[in-house]
Length: 329
Image (cartoon, rainbow, N blue to C red; front, side, top):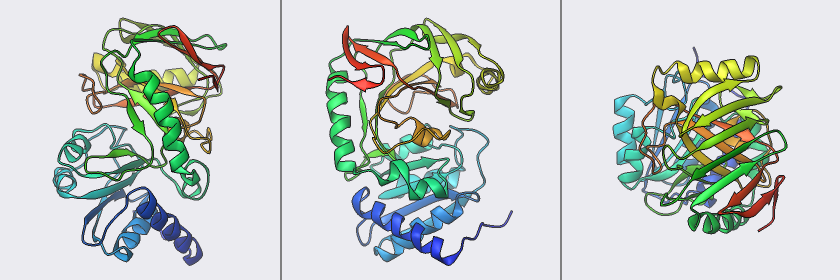
């Protein structure tokens, strides 16, 4: 498959956005080793970042890989090695490399940067990516400081969600969009607070009425019964069947692990069926299944899929902090 080419005016627009992100979110400096990991489908965006890196005076490397087969699949070994040796990186790819051991190793080695799973050209021009990340950062800190002190979370919704889980002792990550220090990691577009719930602690029912990773915006609610930290039943029509099949395809119990609790903090984000932006929508809450080993959990599953709840209520140790999608903190 040949690399996708774009018209010159669009190429210039992509370059302008990439240059802005390199300046404001990544603070790329002359002489830094700047790695761009992209694939054939997202090549125009990867190329824009490469050109922006060259213009910034960075030692810029462009790695184009074959598309992965699912979110969470590891990149090729030579790419993983290069990732560890970078000072700063950006990863616009079809499938997410966020929850991979390669990304975790790069972060531990001190590389700073962001992944951009399923990014496309329209998303690169509007929506969450256009947010003022100094404001997004303040919202992340506001919610994050409350979650830092929390032992138990309860989520409810008019759609039928009612679930509790422990987040005691777990690191509460702020995905602020400002990745300025060695080891800083997040998404672009950014805007969420998230953590790995304590394994085995989640019990209740989740009703996803927004979107699910690799499934898209939901036409029918997907209901997930959770017992002792694992999804035990998934119902709701063809979209539920697809979600269940994606998890079942891993052929391991760990794929059904309640892996993540996240709160959207980006007022510019829209629900569009691409989880990179969906999970950042201000006022939503998301729960993911599968791997949590890359952000403070103990489960390796080789897959990580998020589901979005549109207008949830959330209680931290019994105190209501979100009421039907509205923050009340």
